[in-house]
Length: 301
Image 1 (cartoon, rainbow, N blue to C red):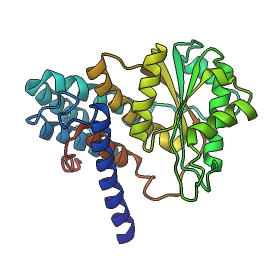
Image 2: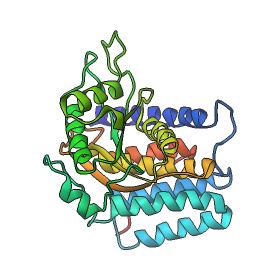
Image 3: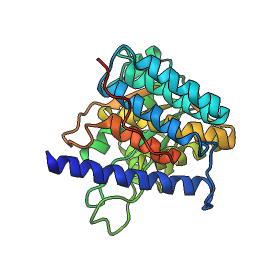
């Protein structure tokens, strides 16, 4: 148990560092914040993130009231802070707190999922495929599964573009193969998806990087909506981070596509750290926003 807690602490510290590096990337290496999160507003935003975690891990009948009070206090402090955090809280409540929220699991044919979720067959819709660490410079079975899920969705939406995101990861990768490059090759050569539909980001090393670099490609292509494809245990986590980065991206550039769908490689993780996806997602969001995340209010009966 102690070892698990130590691993979680170290992992969260690394996530905060990644968030800081992401801010530097978005603001071109300067030291000024990329968004309007004010110094005075940071404790309030940290309290909101903590309360979102409490509502997820120890739900009670007063969660909605606590979150609404946090947002009201943030709005009174800064309209800019409120626009970002309201988008984050609203998406979190839909994806993590709504028991009716459905994950669509790949079964080889995504047609019914597209119809039920309202995923459009349009060139202005993007299928964002998240990478997974390579082993010996090659895709692991989990990444192959994500590609198979993406291919099923691409066949159901033949006009949509695909964005594969992931850099040169993993030990023993002397040729610096990238997740995105291998994913595109697999989708095109094995799954039969047209290479011209597939765009790649070969720099991302974290889920936050996935989001920022994907948004750059989507903006260039005029994309207005997106579906995230990843493993089932990573879907809510990935969506929450994409949505948070999208709120920042929207404020800086006046653009961010709407996340309207999900499609998953059906896999749970045996990694005890990754199972705590809500806490990891909120720690990453805190790092991206540059705020300290509070522990949240005491669990409520």
